[in-house]
Length: 398
Ligand code: FEO
Image 1 (cartoon, rainbow, N blue to C red):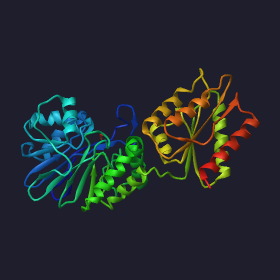
Image 2: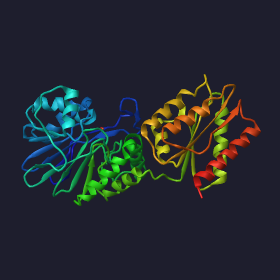
Image 3: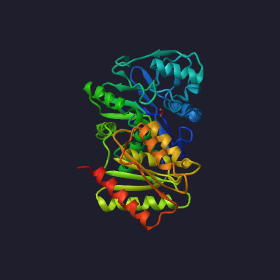
C-alpha cells in the first residue's frame, strides 16, 4: 500500500494492524500503529525514514513498486530508533552508496544498531537540502524523545515531517486526521504524549516556541506514527503546548491494589467522599493490577491529583503498586497533588512508603495519608468518606 499525499509526495510506510505492545512489552497499542515513511519527488528524490526491521522485506518490495530504488538520491533519518531505521540494512543492500542525512547523534545510534559504513551526512538546525524547486530544512529536536530526534520541513508544500512528535499509535486505512474518529485520535495522541513525552515537557514547550517563531506556513504535519494532520494541522501543536504546560483537567484518579478487599473498600469509600463533596470533579477508580498500565498513566497525566492505595505486605507494598510508582517517578509529572491510603494487619508501613515515593516523584502531598487496621468497618469507612471529602476540598482550592 502507498498513497499520494500531494505534489509528488507519497506515503510509503507500513500499517501494523496487529501490534498490541510497543517498546518491547512496555506500551499497549490497542489500535495498532503505523510506521510512516515518505517519498518526495522533485528534481531529486528523497526518502524520509523507513519502517521497523521486521517489515523490511515488505517495505523494500513496496517501495520498489513506487520508485526505482536507484533513483533515490537521498535518505533522511529523522530518528534512529528501530521502528524508523530498522529497514535501512535491507534498503542499503540495494543502494549502498546513497547518502543518509541525520543528526550526528543519529549517526552514532545507527552505527550502534547496524555497524555499517554507510555514506552519512550530519545535519543540524537550519541546514538545507535542495531537491530542485524545493528545499528540506532540518530542525533538531534533541531529547524529543531521543538525543538524535529531528524534524524536516519541506518548503513550498509547507509540510512538517515531525517524526514521533504529534504521532499516535493508531492503525487506520483512512490515514488523515479529519477522516478518523476524533475521540479515538485524541485518546491515542494524549496517551502517546503522557507515556513517552511527559519527562521532556519543558523541551516540548521550547521547541514549539522555536518552530512557531520561524513563522513558516504549515499546511500539513506528517508524523511517523498514525494519521497525518491535514485539517487544521496546528490543532495538535496547540494540544501539545497545553499538555507541556502541565495544565491538568478537573480530574482525580484513585488507583489501588488489594489482597483481601480491604483497600478496595477504602478506595470505593474515598471515591464516594470525593463525589459527594465535589460532584463536578471527574473521579476515576482503577485496580492497578487489573488495569492497563499505559491507560492508567494517561489518566494520571490528565488529573490534578492522584490517590494511591496498597495494603502492607512484608513491611512493604504490593508489587503492582511498586511498579506503577516506578513508572510515575520516571515520567516526572509536574504540578500534581497526591495522597496515600491502605489497610494493614500489624506493621502498617504501606502509606508511609507510598507517600515517600510520591514525594520523591515531585508530587505535593495533600496529607499524611490514611491507614486502617484489618478490613475496614463502618467507622473506618466513615474515615474514608471524610478523607475523600477533604481531598476534594483541597483539590478544588479556595
Ligand atoms: Fe517511533 Fe522514538 O520511535
